[in-house]
Length: 113
Length: 112
Image (tube, rainbow over all chains, first blue to last red; front, side, top):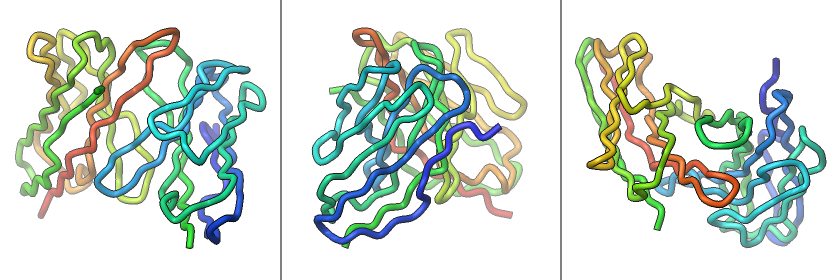
C-alpha cells in the first residue's frame, strides 16, 4: 500500500518558471494538505482541502494555487516561482475530522534559483 | 495566534538514558494531541497520539495536562535509533475542519 505519493522528489526551477507538485493518496481519506518546511520555521500549512470539491488557505498561501482533482489527488501549483519558495514541500492526508493524525508523503525538495 | 512551543534542543544523551520532552500550546480549546517523529531529510511520521489519561507504547510515554496546556513525551532506555526530531502536534478545531499545528521540533541525539 503506497499511502501518500508525491512527485517529483526533487526539482530545480529558475525564477519565474511555473510547476505543479502532484500528490495522491490511496487510503480513501477525505482531507488533504500541503505544507512547506524550512529550517528553523517548522511545518507551515499552505492550503488544505477538507473534502473533495473544497479548498482553503492555510498560513502561507501567497504564491500558490491548489486543485483537488478528485478524492485521491491534490496538486499544488507555483505560477511564478521565487527564490523564497525554495523549501521542502510535504503533502499529507487524513480521514477528516478531529482525532486523526496525518499521513505524509515523502516530500518534494524544490530549489528556485 | 495559534502556537505550539517546544524546546529546540538538541538533547544529547547516552544510550540507555531516559529523556523527556515538553511542549506547551496556546489554544485551550484544542482537542487532539500527537507526537510525531521526523528523521533527517524524511517526512514526519506519527509516533503516538496523546490521551487525557496518559498513554504508553513500549519505551514511550505521553502525558497531557489540560489545565497547564502542556504535553510531554518520555523516552526510556534510549536507543541509537531514537535519534530524530520529535514534533509536538496539536489540533485546533475551528469551523468545519480542524487543522494540525506543528511545533518546530526537539532534536534528540543518542550517543553510544
